[in-house]
Amino acid sequence: MSEPSLVLKKTPEFHDWYSELSETERTRVDARLDRAKQGHFGASRDLGEGLLEFKWANGMRIYYSRKRIQGIDVLVLWGGFKGTQKGDIRKARRLKAEYEHDLEN
Image 1 (cartoon, rainbow, N blue to C red):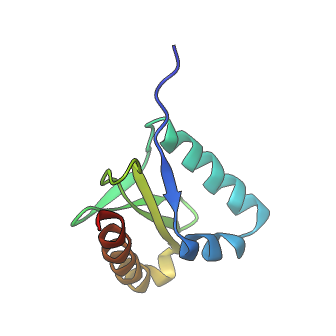
Image 2 (cartoon, rainbow, N blue to C red):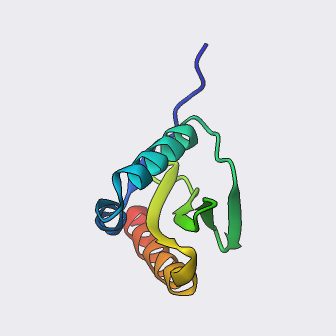
């Protein structure tokens, strides 16, 4: 019996960030998001107020929300790297508020 698959929605902003990654980085992101769909989130950190981040040893980060809205289990908001983390978290919080508001209304 296979595990239920979670529904992930990636924002256009995430897609823009993702498109700038190297092929190796995209492969790592894809593998991590595939595991998340199966409920395996690995090394994640709770940033408060419903915002979480996936972390990699190379400093890469992906910011997401796990609030279930309209059949979406995980909202993949934004990505970044350790060096731009403060600004990336601010942007992810803004995107989270915007997208969750839009989905709830």
